[in-house]
Amino acid sequence: MEVLPQDCIAHVLSRTSPQDACQAALISQSMKDVANSDSIWEAFLPPDYREIISRSTPPVSFESKKELFMKLTSPLLIDGGTKTISLDRTTGKKCYMLCARELDITWSDNSLYWSWKHLLQSRFAQVSELVMVCWLEISATINTRMLSANTYYGAFLVVKFANRAFGLDHLASEVLIQVGESKYEGSICLCHTKSPDRIRERSDGWMEIEIGYFHTEDADTGKEVKMRLREVKGVHLKGGLIVEGIEVRPV
Image 1: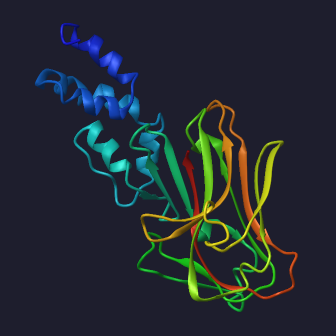
Image 2: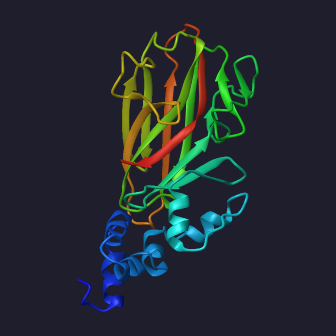
Image 3: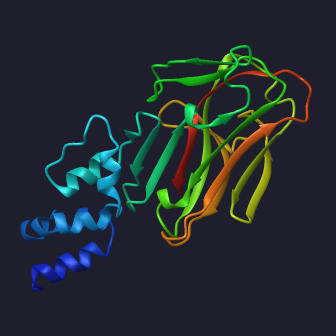
């Protein structure tokens, strides 16, 4: 491969993946120079990366497109700290997380039912803790234009369970994913031991509750994705659910 012109090698590598480019850089110094070039790593960045980093506070500093890509594989706070975006290290696909303030949480503006607080374990300024309700409903929307095109995504509610948590597993909660006319509905018990495949511990110390999955189409066909978890059929009280946000990531 090294006998090929460098621009030919660069063209080939730009059509592979970030992982392939990193492996190619180990072959030789000349391959490393090509594999680390801006032309290749810009191809791995999302088309709107300039607009994305312009929404970050503080600004993102970088000396090469590879350095920028690697920085974006860790969550970057954007839009005044209300969202994070990161890139999948293997594919470069976009992952978003909406903080609790970006969600529609029924009665979250009433301190009798929900309390807002700061937790050191959260990257966001505030999380919301369920004080006590009988009607639990959490939803959010995201436009597919924000996401990577032609990609399967999963939506996950990111939470902790306070020591005082009660009533959450009395009845199964309903979950919903809706994209246009396409709809997925299911149910999940908010108890790790009862739903071990759908409630998992994350590497950041939080738990994630599987809401559902969907597929994005071409970038120019933006559609609203509705994501929801609710339990409104029971009349029993429940509390102790701490909500950090909803993460939407490639699967």
